[in-house]
Image (cartoon, rainbow, N blue to C red; front, side, top):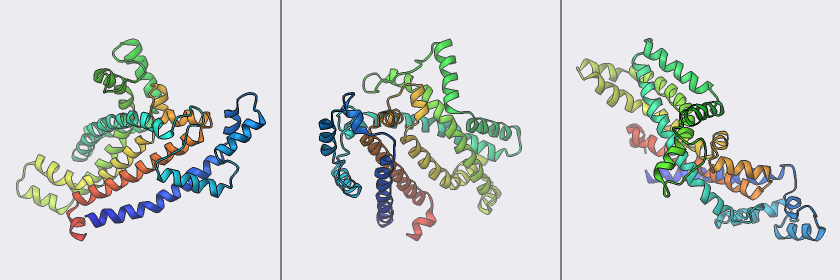
Amino acid sequence: MLRYILRRVLIAVPTLILVSVFVFTLQKLLPGDPVLAMAGEDRDPATIAFLREKYRLNDPILVQYFVWLGDVLRGDLGMSLRTGLPVTELIAQKLPVTIQLAIMSMFWALLIGIPMGIVSAVRKGTWADWLANIVALSGLSVPNFWLGIMLILLVSVNLGWLPASGYESPFVDLKRSFQTMLMPSLVLGTGLAAALMRHTRSAMLGVLQSDYIRTARAKGLAERRVILRHAFRNALLPVVTLTALLFGELLAGAVLTEQIFTIPGFGKLVVDAVFNRDYAVVQGVVLVTAVGFILMNLLADVLYVLLNPRMRDAL
């Protein structure tokens, strides 16, 4: 198992290098000059020259890249051109918010999507199957921003049950934090639940037609045990992979949802950085997001092996 994990890590290294090249190169193509924004309205030539020299913007792009990459390997993602704070400090402030939102969203997705997928597969062709598919199609079709606005109008404005926006750390006020995250996590979770439902249903339908499932039923095993212990366990493999990818997507930041509910997470951070031409922050956020995706893929590979005895035997 350890050798397998090391192989997967080594495969991820070229991906990270390629991502770093794209992150550094593409931000150079963004319109505008951050130095002019930092210089203020006067744009004194001496100040502009000083800033270009300070941030090594006069060096060739290749030199700038290797200097930046060396700093990244030392854990230095640079300084925010707008606030003057280290990018690592800004990410450390925003990342826990996004992780909390991602965990709560994934909780709703798993709670809704997997049971619906199982019921839809087991009751194929019945009203339960049709209802589950209609709910899944609605979850995939309804835009998150529209659902978020509707929830704010109904739950916050009309009923007054939950705060319409804002965020509170769970370490400060756990109840308030749960209340502020409930609606945005539900908005994100419903869309993810629809995708999980479709994949769970498809995987379950394939497994339920297997010979060992017919054998288990012929032995007289209880239907619940056949479904949950034999069928669902083998149908988990593609679902685990999808769950890891969806969680990695959530770590990238749900831009529209965070904007609607005024959640100070990764999505809002990167949007503000793009508008302010704060390239160091954009680079840092995208790089951390890419690392998050790779780690989630690695976790999915490990879980895939743990859940699949044939792959364990092949290692």
